[in-house]
Image (cartoon, rainbow, N blue to C red):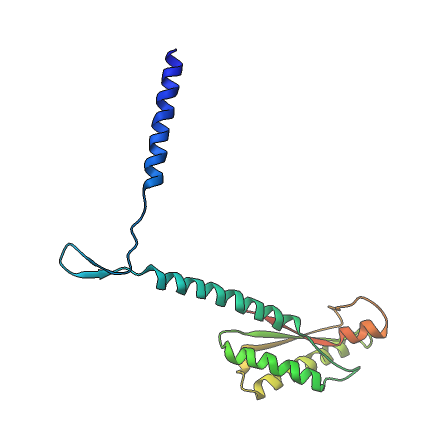
Amino acid sequence: MNNTKRNLTCLAAMAILLMSHGCASLKKSTGPEQSGDGLNVVVDDSAAAQHQKLAKANTAGIEDLILEFENANIYFDFDKFSLSPEARKTLAAKRDLLADHTDLAVEIQGNCDERGTLEYNLALGERRAKAAKDFLVSGGIAAERIATISYGEEKPLDPGHDEKAWAKNRNARFVITNK
């Protein structure tokens, strides 16, 4: 009997606490309020909330742009480092993004297929990365924002040993280094 009475008392106390907590609310006002010192104070949470939402949207937007930027490789003909019209078009889009977002820096990674010596492919990969960098710099992007590296044949996109695989592996890849 005593336990039942105690349980009911605890249950009633919890119900009162929950109801009083559930009824509590914060007063939000977008109009002027009188403060204790006679000054009008304006409380406007909506501007801060909108700014925060916009910042999140911009962050999500830039993340999508960076992903698109990094996934757009440029490709080269066998034993060449000259830029094709398609590569120039891709680089122009990359240049525009870098011009709009001056806080971003990029590493251009030159790659080759497996044919040729290791030394030759490293040198060719460097010339490919430099050709892409030169295009971006000539378009107004600061050279200090662009690093180049050659991986030669060491990082193939396609592990195959045929012309289709080799064509994929003759590329320059782009990595934003300060996300």
